[in-house]
Image (cartoon, rainbow, N blue to C red):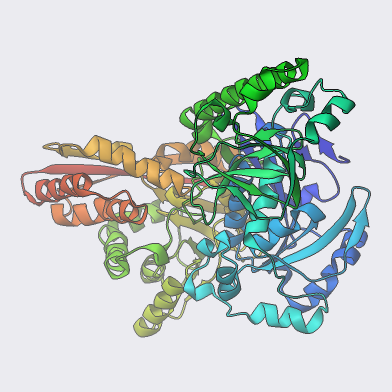
Length: 639
């Protein structure tokens, strides 16, 4: 493809410099798939692309910061039929949700349009042609919960109730674009289409090696077919159902058949039968019950053989022997393919495919069942009131220690201070208390927490605090705004610390200070020890990693900040022990969120609960000593 860098397996064209790449990496470190998203807040489309996609009309209607364009998606052939494409799309949508984007655009080849419909995309502009063929402009209203729910889009996992636009964006698009409409599509047909795309080109063997009629002359084949039954089947027609009895074998003459397993009403296609290939062949070796569903993926024609096919043909002329040899070869290949599939599903490769941003050379394992970009999202936690109280305690329990340290590293009254991940606003209000002449800007993505923060500062009569919607990777402030940029217990939740640091550096003035306060669970010490805790601590770290976080971020802050180009980076360890705070408060602060994240991930059971109960009991004992070390990292923007 024009613009493809085959060595790095990314696109290199005029859109590349303002794009975000997502790379699927296998266990050997090879790129096996990539997806590229363009954010209009970072660059402009070419005039030709703007005309074809009618972007200007969209820009006239919506804030460009809320629109993305997926400009490239590619898979290594060996990765087809696996979960790689799902992981790439999921990672890109997570990132888009993190940025606050509400509209996503792309153009699709004709054969992929039904797949995009299933994700929730709708057509809106006229089709156009590229050198590769016709392309269909599509758009998705990422916060239209009712529509996405109606088409059963997996993207609904990324939307909270507060984000639901209740169809507002769709109504706006309908008024401007004549081509915008809700497409009707058959979910089964879409699944069948995707199955063909996933499997038809997956096997390396030649077509001859899987063709039952290989080596059979045309006149011999005509004579054979004159004695057999030809049958037309419609798309979606079920030819065989699993566990049904029947010894009739068939050969596909035209079309395609899917081999389905799993839920019979919504099967997962694990293989595709192509013209010339047999199906139902197990009946010829005495296995009368079918092991899978056989479903026509499109209008097809089949040739039916009797159940005693092997005995009848092998007893006659050489054509029977050749057919028998071909069938045995095909059976052998299918056994080999099944062994390969089993080893792939039970081996490391199924779990080791990782999605990473191109700018990062450190990747995180993404689990498709997890539905958030960051490991902390207030609206996904079961006990929100309990978590709110924990946040307040966490912010206030050691405030004198924390703010004396901040003053020591250079925070002064009268400065503009940015509080990233400001949550319910407690840290922001404490900053205003200790530095009353400073202007405090809290940046927080969660609408509920921003609302609580505004209510709190209004109730307390604090006028120098404001709270804006944004994330660490996309701070809605101008360059060189802050004298002091502070992230308190935020980086443990971020999937891309490098991107967040780049943003912090961008908004901080020359000579200003960047400071990060965060945890490292490797520093948790208790005496007496909590039985079973090491295994639970490891489980918490794994779960948070699956959501994009890192329970051991503290030890990494020095290197991350230095690589970003921040000058004079220092790490000040701050020990918090049960000699300064009560053991029960220590438990709530240090163990409370761990309990919530395990419950959210479905990793909570009686064994885990028992360990947490023991931890609570141990820490309630006044003779117990416990400690955690918080890392305070800081440095300056070079003049």
